[in-house]
Length: 75
Length: 215
Image (cartoon, rainbow over all chains, first blue to last red; front, side, top):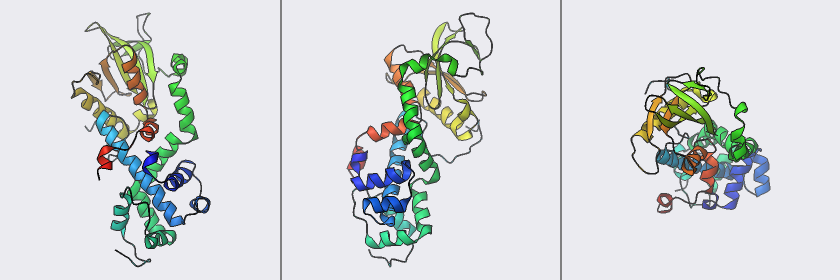
């Protein structure tokens, strides 16, 4: 999935999202504005979520995005 | 379309979020997001919000990596002592690790992030079965229980060589479980490997989706 994105987009996602580093710091490192980092990380996350949902529909895996907190046994 | 840099436009955020190949970001939007916390929050929420960031950190971050190493280590599965089988009832059969419903649990086949898979014997129908049991930490979670039940229903609705038949499910048990055909060898192991939340890692290895590329 990484190859679907420009390297800086991916880096912005990984460094802020996975490594949990401050957006300002990562922006400086990548030579981007803070706004660009926010957009980049959100786009990767949105794509990841979409992919997870597709896979989950295909194979009944557990990653989903239902409205949560449904009481047990309500289905 | 040009907007005043100061204007908030959630619909534009949403549209932009799903533009796959437009790597260049409109300057006004970029500038606006640099100064507008409300729109940053909105963008984050549209992308998936706190729940998905947590998921990403858990499964792709340091902890997730070590968890993957543990799960893919075949010897880890033999450490039965480290797997909590408290939820089993005692059995009079000496070959059994315990009872779950009417099933005699014989061995632990695998462990994933969401639970464990046990090999068991069905005394009524005299056949071996595989039982997938939801992990204790997820058994207390309504959404996880619901997904577990839905997985069972989805699998039960399908008859296909690549889908393990589901015999029964008890999603009201303290630890919900799903009884499946026992399939020795690789195919079951593959399914076990697929059952954990580490799936996100797999997603990253999967190439671009054709449906997406066609847009």
